[in-house]
Length: 321
Image (cartoon, rainbow, N blue to C red):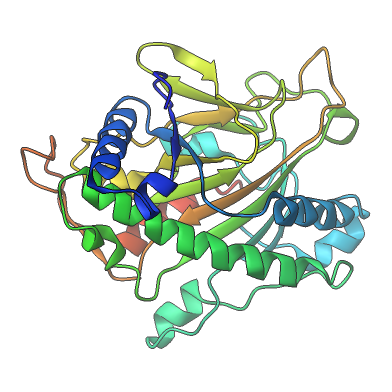
């Protein structure tokens, strides 16, 4: 484990380690999430070949003509294609920026929920592009692995706070999640960035934990810390970048910070740079009451909120138009 504010940790210390290994890991996780809200995680067992295959299939969709992609067009929080100009993530923190320089394929939970109103809002069927039929089985396999990984991480997070390992994961009996494949093409596709325009503007995520599979690049991920300001995120091949979202920060009474981050625009000295990220946004079961853990663990006592009322407000806030 490094001494960086954003350390790299081996998840096998949690899944296979003894009590001492778990204690050391928990201390590292707690310190990192207090300072930056980010971790890099290795030892997760997710095949990098699966991630590569998803990228290859998704790229075959993204390079289609816009008229073909519009058949799958959706809005933020929906299922399908988010085209250029659909989203401005900085809106969520009250910053006016031009729309984000990206396209996304977005999928989510689709297993039916008992409440018809909740089912209609959060569990609509995914829309898979017929032009790339191989994408659906690849993503479904990946999402099964993300569901497992998310529960392991939530168990670790409960333990790191000195709480029961199921303190968070028990709210995952029928969770929602979001999954975005974000394509960041070069300027030959998106044009020259406007003043203050990013591939993704400065923001925090909205849910519990985000599991990011990213590629390194000059126009890549930056994270914000009080000590260093904006800095390039560390990159370890095959690792996942994990960050805490707003719901988890509230749940911990701001002991852990919701990791603020952004994705830089295409670099001036490498304008054709193309990156793609696979982003799993962990949430919880609709109707979960998120109430701040009391002191001495928590630092701020937020009013209790309904998890999905909060999530809907946030998703609406970043929608352009």
